[in-house]
Length: 229
Image 1 (cartoon, rainbow, N blue to C red):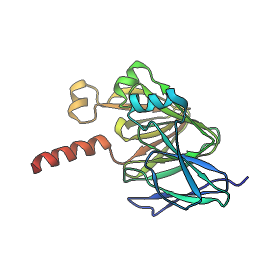
Image 2 (cartoon, rainbow, N blue to C red):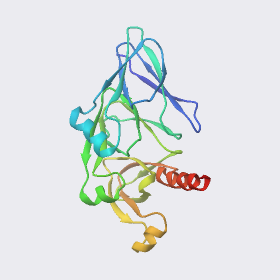
Image 3 (cartoon, rainbow, N blue to C red):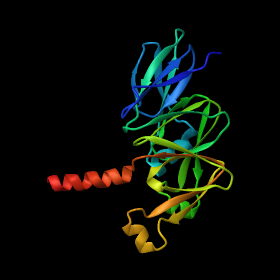
């Protein structure tokens, strides 16, 4: 059976993804991600992960309740997908690897990719910036993630550690572990530095980091709008 083909086009500040679907093949995508498509594609809304998973995403993580399911008819077809934010896009071929995703980083995936919600412990839930639930993806197939700003990958060896600001974190392999730490030695320094809490990762595994912080951008934009009033 022919496989769905994903291709990143118009790379730069505002890339998009072309999904080429053979006859009868399906993908699912974030709500509102479909930019254009050929007439041979049909769209339905679906709750990936069931009602419980959909409620967790919507009520507890502030994400979409329904996903788009795009299916090609007998002649196949293609669709162009665009994320809500300007930034990078990465295609991950899972092959059995599990990832955890930051809120808002999912764009699309092949139908075989499994998506669920995982509960974090109290400390991570309060201070990670992700809340008590994170999105877990696994299974086989291709996963498309998007970022705010450019995307960087760091591959950690067993036992190797790396520190990432919470708001720059995009995705991380399930083989990694992490702890929530203060950015600086003291509480006052941690918060006056503008960093607050950070994630201290330990390998093995890959972590994906975005070069811009949505929280910092929101703060800058708020200050700018205030000055304009």
